[in-house]
Length: 309
Image (cartoon, rainbow, N blue to C red):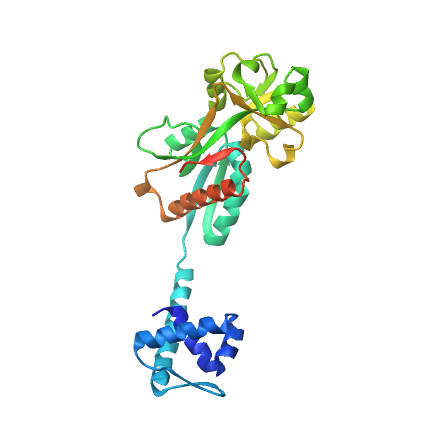
């Protein structure tokens, strides 16, 4: 027996006909007839008497009606109780700038819909700073780009991102990369002479690039995402970043060339206090982060990323 069957039965009795009930419920009349027939089969008794004027409840139907009304009333009470006891609390989250730009607003919207009584504190800073904050227990949850943290923390890989050389088309042509523009790829060794703007050396991305590519021609060091990307629009510079760094406002101004030989990828890790230490509110936030990321990637709102959670 399903709640839906009980609702259909009550509506048919109140409306006096299956057709009127179908209009009220905005459901096909055949679907209602099937559900009520199924209910009668399960109970092994006739609940409704069909006639030329509609339907009326049988004596068994009248008895079932009384208790069905009580059941639905109790269900409504249960829903109200669940709402009044909904999750509440405070959760501190830490994201790097690229992640904040992608995930921040969708996560805030989802949390406000699902858990309006949970207060979020969102800290935006570099991955290295986030590790320090986690180790100092100043954050409940963070997304970082390395798994080299204390084993006491819960850590799981979330997203794999490919690295791209980003610059205006004129800048790439200036450095003889017209063929790369056609193929949308560039070999690592071709990057060496191009003037780059990159985050400082303490940044995990900078360390990754220097390890994979070697010597780079870095002329500016900028940690802020928007200033770094704006410099690519207004100056003859390039940068090597994950596809997520090229936010929608830059996509029509900047060319992206996938770095190959070798390909360079970055893993985003979801880190938190041990699961048993997290509050119910923090566990809810962690689940919401996973859901948001899956949706962003499915909707292609997170460029050049692969979900690996």
